[in-house]
Length: 141
Image (cartoon, rainbow, N blue to C red; front, side, top):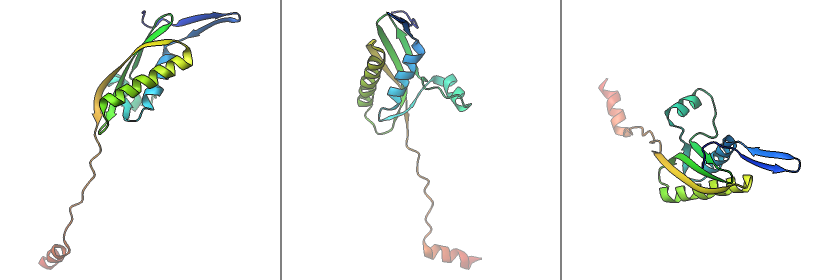
């Protein structure tokens, strides 16, 4: 397979060409909708670009396109508490079916790279002062 070669289909009205970036967007949307995915991971540069306000739906997705098939690499952050193998399998199914149904290309592989686990934000616990201790503090003044 050649990397980033767009597929061309000739019809009686002309040709239809699907850009690899379209497949990246489809794969990114399909993967991000899977339960347990905290976010897509585009690496250090992609994360900085997004913080500067540049939204990239295809962040963390790389696609290799052949004449009739595609291979996809997806990098994600998983939410804490979800079974990683199950989330990865759901991503593979979702990405594969989305690309195949929208483009007609056959997806030969979907490689899922788990790059991090998003931990639950710890709840801020306020120290509880007993009522009698509070009264004690007021008397000491």
